[in-house]
View 1 (cartoon, rainbow, N blue to C red):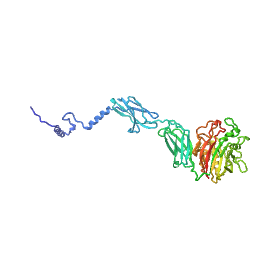
View 2: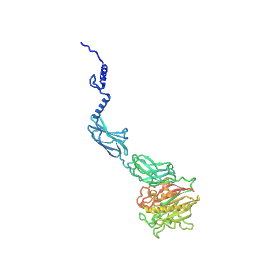
View 3: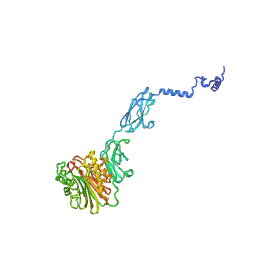
View 4: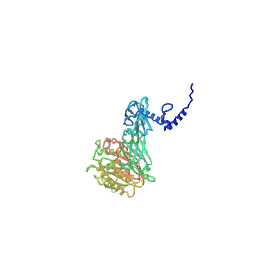
Length: 516
């Protein structure tokens, strides 16, 4: 028996290495003494990766996103070898913040089905392929989409109530369709960009109290404009209505000298009839009933439109129990023109009056009366006017001229800085134009009681109805305005069925406290 010595593998490799080295080779380049050549580690990893990559299914092709409201559909083309697919939605392009994964499906389309996908949201989408046995393949490149948003509905019945010299309440009667919230914008002038906004969350919200408005640039005694904007996700806005608002002046120090109920009424010319066919004699007691409890009344259209058609002032005075303002010699201050002022002669004494024709337009006037409250011996001015009508730009331009004249005349007759109360049919509302008559007056220091009184009655109605149903969108063209020495605690429109009213306007009234 021949016995062969045992030689270890390491010895063999050492001897072989020495022999090869003599020929300029290394072990790595030589056949293994124990079999096939040994491949380097890096070479083995690369080979495996190549095999793996060859087997991996490619990404879906021609990925398209079909956008919709708060959701979307994705379609794609099948790559070679792909059997299954899954859509992935994330909130970032890196696809690390995944919001939704569809089920693995053989279909080449899928809808998002998740409450996390909402209207107006921006998302990133990829689609992944899967091969046999649902082995994961490649993903398509991320694609961005921002979902569509359904426009929220319109808000018409927006109203404001002054709570204090620094706080305002904004309300609306019903929620806007499809709204998820609201944004309240305040602008210093009509049509200007808002300088302050506040969000109101909740589809069923009906209003909000805005406080500390002075800190946001809206001072006591200022008039401005409010827009209540229905929103739907991500602050995308729908329609809204712009309304005027104002903050009352800070009341003067001390107690008021007196309080009074002041009314204003366009009674419709005495030559005219109402919707029920009633003439002046039948209308007078009905008109007077609308003024019950008034201490001071400004009347417009108090004269006849034609010669001999009569003057409303004397008849209205008798029917209400009030007295027409007269000069000491008994002559009527109104000179029997189409405006007049009635007052409670037991409480107030007339000291002087002025009847001034206004420039521009068709024979319009301002009646200004200096009166004195007997009990407190407090002097004050009460005035009334009726500006030119018409909604066209030409009429608005004439009203602007007339209103500037009213401001100048009131300043002329108030050198003593008395309390001032202005009544009248201004034929324009604050939010109707940037130079509406009540807005010009507000900039001169006269604020409407309908804007600053904390208590309102029927203020949601228009003041001029034209014998048809008054819309519940407040457009007040009849006004009771006052300077900083007069505080309004309430304002009301004597609303009734237009078809039964004795005039094509509603009477308005305000409770006022007058400071010395």
